[in-house]
Length: 103
Image 1 (spheres, rainbow, N blue to C red):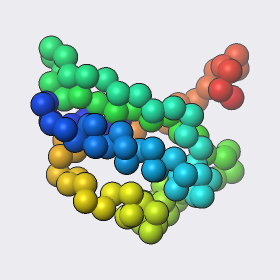
Image 2: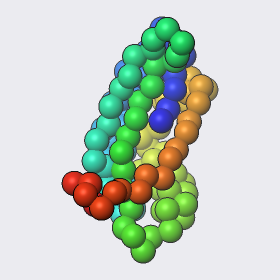
Image 3: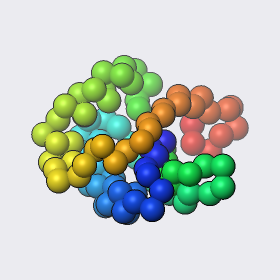
Image 4: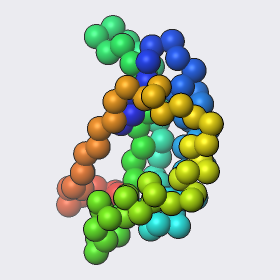
């Protein structure tokens, strides 16, 4: 989850960047299943962007992500975007249940 300042155009700009991230992530064996935005709301001032990605079971998640974040693809995607507009980043590892369609 990535949070942006209220009233900022950063979320709209980062939506475009995320569309570029999808192919770069795939080159690093990270599959994007979906990307969603959540507008600011009372009690949660910052709009947010959520991305659901998966890694192969045998992959080291941290290593895959760090490799992508230091890649030329990522740097090219982020060119011209002020990362100071991002006010928070959180990640969670989700473990699918036995009956989950996304296993």
